[in-house]
Amino acid sequence: MSRSVTGQYEQRVQALVNVINADIAREGDRIGARLATMKNSLKDDNNFRNVVVRGADRSYVLDLRRQRDAHVRARLSPDPG
Image (cartoon, rainbow, N blue to C red; front, side):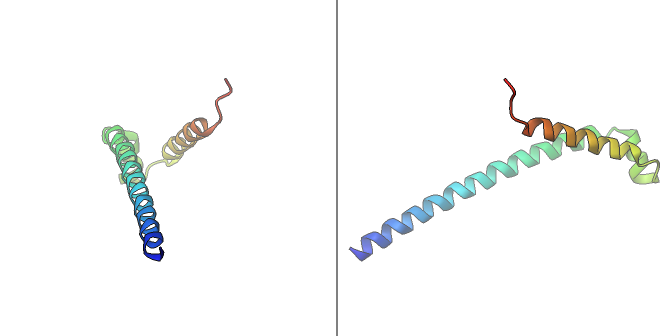
């Protein structure tokens, strides 16, 4: 009896490990896709390049950050409808 309970427990633990690994892989893919999108949008952005390379006015980058934060907040807000 003890062995069967231990075996069942180990199977449940392994099943949970598999679920966690799958979740991590999906999240990694999602983050990778978002980073690729950012990379593609910023690579031709001369204003961003001026801030990063030349130390130009940082307000442009801060505005990008505010826009991103607003977008994230909008996605996290409950749907009013």
